[in-house]
Length: 117
Image 1 (cartoon, rainbow, N blue to C red):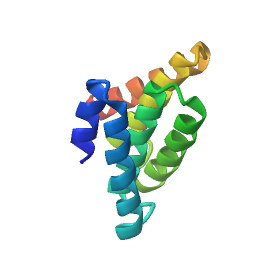
Image 2: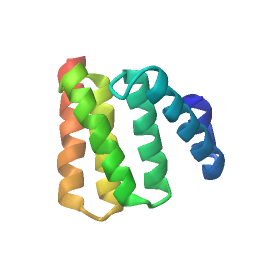
Image 3: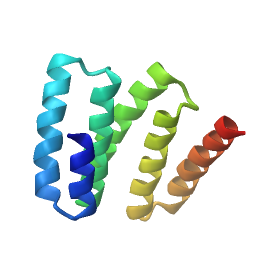
Image 4: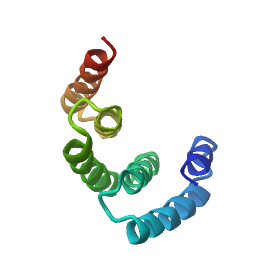
C-alpha cells in the first residue's frame, strides 16, 4: 500500500494517497505496534504527503515521531533514519527555514557518505 500511496503522491492524487496511508498506518499500529519499522515507514510517508499538502505542523509532528523511533531502533546512520532527516530538511526548506533545512540536509548527506564510504 505504501508504494501505491507514493505513486498517488507523485501523481498529485493526494486524497487517494491519504486514504491508503491512513488505513495502512492504523492497521499497522494495531497489528504491529507503534515502534515497528513498517509502521514508522508509513508514518514517514504520511509526513511526506502532509508536506506536499502544506500541512506543515502535522508533517513536523509525524517526522519527529518517525525520527525518534528510527534513531532508537536503527541508529543515527541507518538509511531509514537518514531518509527521515532528509525529508525533515525538505519540510524546513518548504517552510523557508533555510538554515535548519541546510543543517538537516547536510546531516543526511554526511551520514550517507559515511555509510557508503
